Length: 256
Image 1 (cartoon, rainbow, N blue to C red):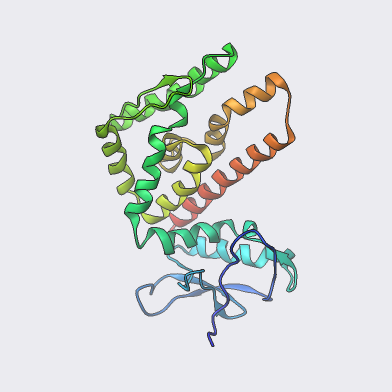
Image 2 (image 1 turned 180 degrees about the vertical axis):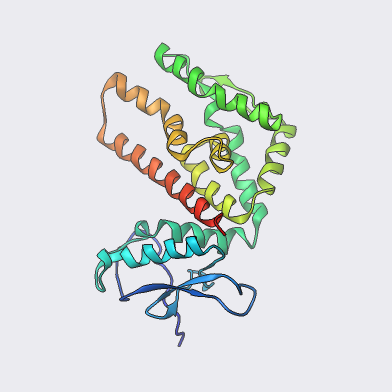
């Protein structure tokens, strides 16, 4: 029988906390030597694929342990869900999915280029059109000025396809990132439906909160015109939280 702690829960079902304390311990030996792992009552956490949860930044390791320490209300027997362990989930993706096959993540992220949020402009109402021009166009300009990449734009919802050269250039950018950055983008880009905003955040050109505001311009403008909607408000809050969590993960991972 393994002496390791069980893997983090999958799905959305709540589970009971089975440990008293969560701590950080250096990882010695093997390919992951020099990193840090989280121990629950002295036993290392393993991910769903049975890989050890090992990271190489002390700050990130302590943040991961902090999640486990707070889970279930901070007491053994308390209920917790995967939503209580957001940094652990991102770390798990980095370790078990991205590290073994980086190209699969690059390919998945590139799929958002043709559906890039900032490239699809409304034709009405006028307020929304004006705000899109003021808040979206500058980020496409930034991409062109920084990387020499010009994205095609359109009005309405008819799909557009970016050129092979554009996709290749974006792919080169993504391949230059480390696993932690790709893991952060793997959360940010699907949440915001914007590869451009994701790249802006991980390069430090835009902070997470601002990027989330830009990405939800349509929804916020529509609610301003037609009235607020509880379901929409919850969706926007979730998006903002996910982008912030991914940004925090990357910041901690980069502290070394």
